[in-house]
Length: 77
Image (cartoon, rainbow, N blue to C red; front, top):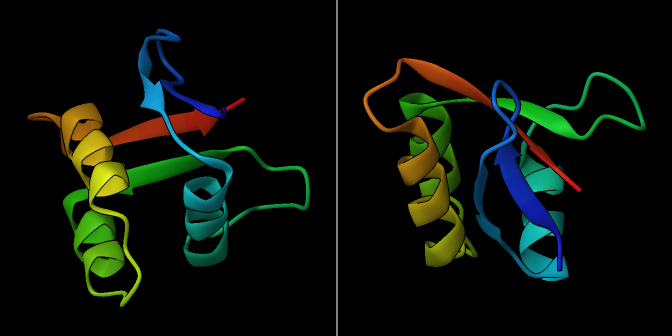
């Protein structure tokens, strides 16, 4: 299972399914084909929430990762 973590301190946010990872890859901007990190803000989460097939578990993990911050870099492996 892919692991989502905070880039700054490598802290694990949670694990997601391959299908949930594909959802993120389909809806978030990648700087290049091998990109595995994303900058997440509250607006990013709202944009994802507006998608018909947005997995609630992923949105909860992203909200947890964001916490009180304006934005965070997350990555997956």
